[in-house]
Image 1 (cartoon, each protein chain N blue to C red):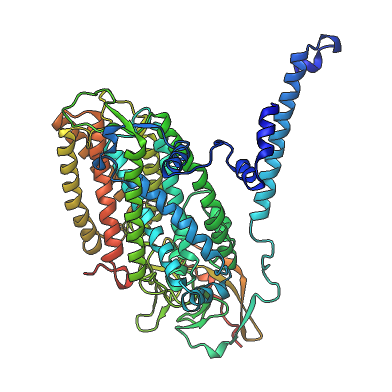
Image 2 (image 1 turned 180 degrees about the horizontal axis):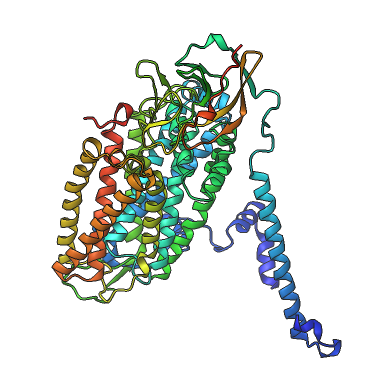
Length: 460
Length: 173
């Protein structure tokens, strides 16, 4: 095309460079409208052109997925900044944090943002997980996205955990010591995994290097790979689940509206409010930092990070093989198989499946909210199976027997509530899920606030 | 491997191509296995493991008379406690709780080790008094040479509970 060549030659050097960067438009972007068109086309490379209007309702998503993305970006930004100051060596790590806080301009602020964003991210992805569960958004065609979501959740959990050790203070050191100790109870490969992760028999130099590499390279890498996969599956499912009232029939997808500005404006608002919130939080509250790690002195009480304190609480009541391996593995298997359980009724898009489902969920919640504290108190002050059955191995007296009680109790509940309400599979599974969820939350709350010196029960 | 068995002229263009494709996939798998092997070997800890009995792992605790019967002495450097039992026997007890690895302090008042993490308790012999700890505290190899108590911290002994042959007694002079 000789003509185009002629046009090109007539341009100045500046114009030619600009054209090489953005060849799409021969006309220079002159006005606001032009810039808007430019950015809109950029956005539409990532987002669909239109979205179903009903999925824009705040009461469907609560903006949780968008919040998670914003927090991940903030964590990556502040994380990179922290890498410039932090030194991952046992003798230097703690001092480098002190240096960061005392001598680096805005050092405290950056660390606080990273700390609070990390905590909040875990809470946000957990709530997002609950939202997806209770709106039935794991049913076909969203089955596999549920699995990816669980993978992302685990990645966030382990990012939090590996980051926990890095400040190398007493809190970090002992929390990681006991959590790594937990790995030993996985039958067969536990000792091997523990050795691989910790790089030796005790938390030390090798552990810190491992955690640092995992925290700053491997887990962010996994998140970067899984996130687009998660979003792509949403596109492939043709958007989010369409919310509807329990009495509504499964309707058509309804009206579609333009993504720009309807969805984008909402997302920007959520992102800005969230960022403002994090900034205020980080200005007002400092990330905790205790004394430097001392391997010879376990503080009393030594607690796992708050998100593992439910598991730590289980440890007090069950033999480690059950609380650390059998129960968590069963839970994970249940969650992974959840979207593949066949059910005749279509529950996607309805909060808590149906009106009956809501009622059953409340009953399940109340049942555990009463039974769990009673169980904890009874186990603390009355029941002592190990002492009542001398000669019986702890594995049976403290493990198998309470586990069987738990199993019989929950499946008894499942059977009774299913028959009593003549419920569908979806409704009954949800009730069972609520049963375990509330129990786990109560265990976590007990572990965080109601355990004092010597891990005895106490009033906070 | 059917392609290989056939005579040269019988090989059509597609079968040769598919043979090479299979070969590439096969080589790719070999490369992947090699890669995983190298990474695993690289990451596995313990290259510079302190060998039992080698320099640096043996700690001289001191002369036998220094430790009264029914006493526990702390050795911070060796990460163990030296227990002397009622009958004069010695045990080098690891300070690491068998439950989750916290450091257990010795309480002289209550005459027991109490773990601050989950309230496991052990007696002077390291035996479990109260769970959740699943087994007795580990021991280190201990021997008495010329009336001097020595502990080899490179030799950790796991055990279910206390047996009398675990305690080491000084030779009666």
